[in-house]
Image (cartoon, rainbow, N blue to C red; front, top):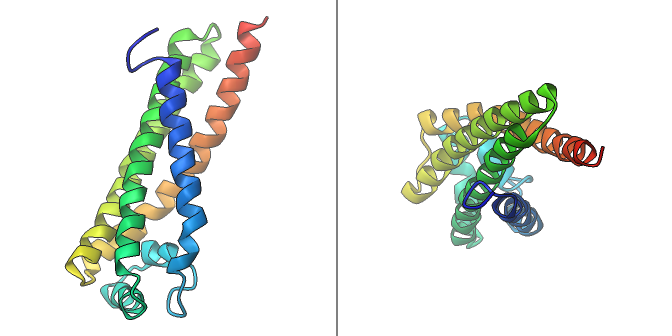
Length: 175
């Protein structure tokens, strides 16, 4: 299969997303402050404008606001890559699977990666909007904090199910 729905595209987007994620994790410690000991993760889970303002002020006082912006932009890149890779992979598994169960797993993967991307975009856009405005918003902070657990569950589920599906697909092709 050629075009966007090819295994080459899947590996580019999916592994590209994992690489960007790894870079974000590796560089994320620089945003850890006394006010935000978990760095960007504290900003994601800050459910009130006051808490967001405290975190952003701690970054501003240490000259880290620009770094926080780049971290959130990197997160937007990660989301796009990883969600696309997951949807492409799920579609390819669904199309090529012999087993009806593997086909269903491919469809489930598509749905999970879509929900992951949607929830993570909602969270990150809510965050970056507050950062750009340099002001917390109860609505945006609450929205980001609400989207976060959905994002986490779908990220873990999507990753694990994709690995299972890839192994299953490989064994199906070799039998």
